[in-house]
Image 1 (cartoon, rainbow, N blue to C red):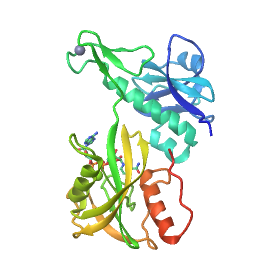
Image 2: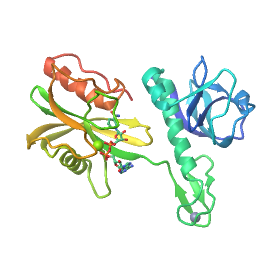
Image 3: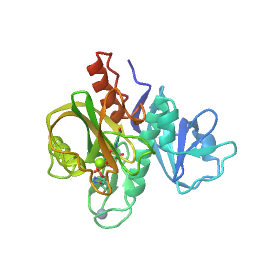
Length: 276
Ligand SMILES: NC(=O)C1=CN([C@@H]2O[C@H](COP(=O)(O)OP(=O)(O)OC[C@H]3O[C@@H](n4cnc5c(N)ncnc54)[C@H](O)[C@@H]3O)[C@@H](O)[C@H]2O)C=CC1
Ligand SMILES: [Mg+2]
Ligand SMILES: [Zn+2]
């Protein structure tokens, strides 16, 4: 299957193509979605901070207009990336997820972290460059482990105070320098619920552009200990029987995939496919 969307570093001096506009309030959208004819969009009253050529959709070039602030565009509104993930077409969500990560990274790397001078976009490469320091900054990706812990027909799910009310999910956490993926997983599970796991198995990965996580998904079996939820981070954690599960995360998330795979295997059903 050929992908409809491929990333690329496009020359912003070339005119034409499609564009998406992003402000601190999300992406501009209208009844047709979030892609607009680029030259039309640039004629609107927008507070342009930077422009990036980000790839091709169905062979057509796509650009990102990164804005200082959300302005008024007749007939249009602003919507956060999560809204597109939950409701929108998956390919459009992939385009916007990539655009959001490039926009955030470029915005946060306008100045050199070493000497403080303005950095410039490198032509044909996704990098910001400081000439005096000869320093390149590339888009930031933060590896995060996510794990479904199981004990026969039971699975361990937890709630963060940040979750939508009622929803329980798998445990997750960011890798720290010096750790392997497995070290991180074992540490996060100890920190968040104080239990020990065994038979750690990698299942798959997913880009999570909120704002720049790379989720590495695992299954692990319970080995020892009693659940003690981490103060402030974990509001509640419990063993749930696979026949009596609480409200679960969105179906496009890897958290949901890890749960659905396990349940499918226990029940002998067909396994789901991990959304990219
Ligand atoms: N796609 C999915 O299904 C799911 C994705 N996630 C994502 O996994 C990631 C990690 O999960 P959390 O439980 O929030 O992490 P966590 O358990 O490591 O705790 C979050 C804390 O880590 C620190 N932190 C923030 N950004 C960091 C970074 N880049 N590197 C190191 N430490 C950082 C902060 O102190 C933050 O409060 C988040 O981006 C979250 O949105 C979490 C659950 C499901
Ligand atoms: Mg966590
Ligand atoms: Zn510098």
